[in-house]
Length: 605
Image (tube, rainbow, N blue to C red; front, side):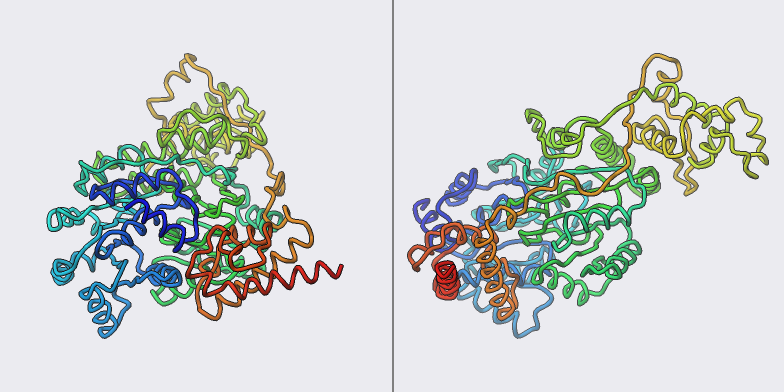
């Protein structure tokens, strides 16, 4: 059966060989065993269930949490000659009956379905009358009640094992720490499943985190200098900020679209469709956008607010550079982000244990922001990969961080918080340290404190940086009543007693994009760039005719290989990675015509 799977990989998908551990996962499913697969975004998870579904008898049922993406996935498979369909609430009654009829007749290779629809008694009864090749549970981290994309319907998916014990199941995700992996196994009944973990490293992504000064100006400079015409995603925590940022970017000349749960389903679907099918679109979104996005040429992911956890950060940044080409994960964050997230957490309705775990996850995210060594090392260590050398492709590697002895300054800050009664926010405490005789300071009599004016050796920005790092390190706590008052934590005692010293980051003023990564077209000669643009133009034209994303026709990597190899016949074109039998028949002549025209133009020079 593995021989047949390899033949389908080559003929249908146009790839010569499997990427580890795809072959091992596929072999397990073909043998009827369960599997839990953790692969980074863009690592080829989909093939792990698509190929076994094509080789085994019956239909592969894919549980997907995002209705909006099912249609795009089905279209892409249909272009490969695969009999795929979806069942969800967007179908009218007649269309749903047609899909159900094809399912009963065994005329489908893959069926995509939302968990809510799958678990309806009527759907389960229908499946009992069909031959099922496998169940694939995509985005399996949604089962985690402590995860960032929790979907309560996922908790009920253990019913699949109970009702279809002989059908192999595969659960897949790009993001799961050790705790979440165990939760997936327990809640989905995958105790007997084989676990496959491919390295979490995404070496083509450059990680950059810097202090927030003027977020919009910083974002504008980043986009202008490094990604003026690229597709990307900008994440914000609130719907209001999403709307305002999208409008501001549009006013600045970018094609920017908002996306959040407060928009109608029609608007969300329209914006997502434009992002997938047009070039150079920037989506400004909450975390409601992105899960399952297949667009391979997202060149940047920017965060204007701090994510709640390392898992959320990794999942969101992983939507950049799925094609393996250089991409940026860029983020600005500041003290207010830290205070806001701590207040959200402590003021939530979560139980004590859940709050404890979420607190640990937030602290890990803050640690990643404030680290002075390689960010990638820290990020991968969080997921259990602790043997990576410094990466050379993050901000702390490219521009090593300077540190300073902040012990004495921190003691002054902590003393000022204590002597002002632990009732005031950062700005007020800094006014006291700088000796500012504001109306509020004098009214409270704090201009007579011993800490009044003892901090004039640092400026306002330096003090804000110091307080940010004290809160991030847990030496100061923030109240949860909405006023942002600071108070000392038990962790600060050794510092106040002189038992420890404190090394802090020396924040720098940020300049424009330095050491920009080399893009695809920059690696090409002038004639090659002309051919590259001509092939992309043909791809765009075909995509518009069929109303599908351009990458569904061919990925950039496939076009790049055409540029480099310049095949002159259908047989030679078939050897290009990503050109399967169906696409060769559908598009081969059109692309050969462009390639031959380019050779003719080159011969005339």
